[in-house]
Length: 569
Ligand SMILES: Cc1cc2nc3c(=O)[nH]c(=O)nc-3n(C[C@H](O)[C@H](O)[C@H](O)COP(=O)(O)O)c2cc1C
Image 1 (cartoon, protein in one colour):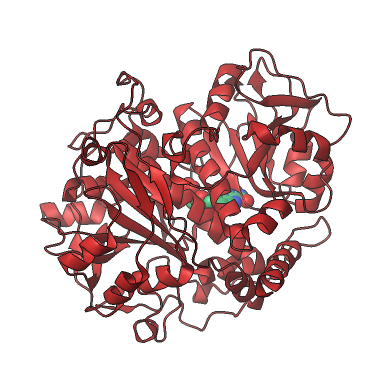
Image 2 (cartoon, rainbow, N blue to C red):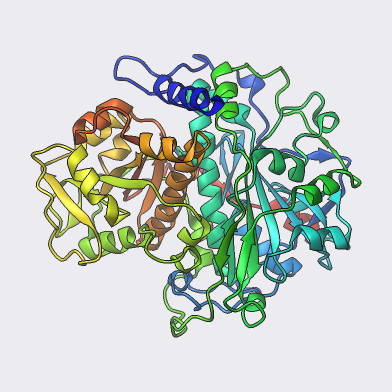
């Protein structure tokens, strides 16, 4: 039974990469700065098509941030070179450069543990005037905001690959370079790469929503198929370069094109394996650049967990496309989605003062509710992109929320899991609804008290976890979920956690505060505080939200300043 040993391998990885008060998971100890991996992959020899840089006020204009979450409120844009440019701008593009002294580093729309950015993006798309004269597979190059043509795809083959998908659909693929995170974080790095993939997944879904597009993960695809589709298995193209591991593929489509023609129709979430092999036989372009001057340190356990959590071929899922929404268009009030997405940053220090009103906390938490009772494509953004049962709940440390007592809280994202949570957590917890909490938000006070020091201590002594308005641990229903689905589901738990994080980052910006993902926490001490024992529930990701203190030494530069200067020169 290979699956059993793979499951054991995943569990072993998880146990071994826990941080303990007495010892951190194994890392490199000392950073080899000279060997730091390049955060920008390029395919040398591949033609590069630059996407237009669009000003904030230029078409396509951003809808309001709130309208992204109101079904049918955003008018669907057609897929053009400009809308595709916005799609990447809002998801994987650079958002700024930071500078201190002679050092400069780029930030992106999507966050990343240690700003190391292991996630690479690919798009398989039909002919698009201005960027692709013919259909093909492209790699997204964030520094240039450009698409590199990796493979040609004859139109008939493209049509075959997209069979069962809505009109004008395209595919968005994602891979990880584990070495980018392992260089700094050693064995725990695989977890961070998966968090980052989840952040990118939600960033892409939210970017699509801003254009009136849908996006959903093709659940049944085997990693092997993704490797062939994205060309990750082409040994000569990676000779001497660090490899990328397959993560996921999403179908993206404009709702307007799907409405009418496809109303009520079924969407098949699969790809014909023979058509994917046919793509592999087409003309491919470019050779992957080397990211580190020296060979990567082989963190064997990362290789083992990556192998053990590979996704086998599953059934192609069929989802019903929702018909036109009954909801009235949402008033275009409040900050623009583009503004919120562009300004998203991690806080590096909290002011220890700023509070948020209870209503704001409830609204933020309502947005992370996946509403599992709905059909997948009727769930709210971004949860309609994840066609499997959500498995993460939240354990909160509330510090400064007006009208909500400080203390420990729990949010059952799937109300059906509430009973299990109660049974698994400390018997003395109160399970009281906080004042004014909407009846359909399963948020409960567990224990009153000042949890500031505790929260910071549990998050590797990081003050940001104790000095904000609130922080939290994302708790997975762990053992049962992995046993039920298989070891490959391990990655999906982290993707879901990353997606929660991405949404909370944006929610924090919309609330006038700021957030930070926290990958460093002491695993089992967190479980002890809430009373979880064994592997039934595991904390996979921490997060904090609060008032930010900026570092005055840093200068912020525009994301594509050089390119606009070159253009106007
Ligand atoms: C998975 C993940 C884990 C992170 N862990 C921490 C952490 O433990 N402590 C911290 O200060 N920042 C943490 N961060 C924030 C990153 O350092 C930050 O995203 C990165 O520097 C890029 O900056 P930006 O988010 O402002 O774009 C984490 C981010 C992610 C996505």
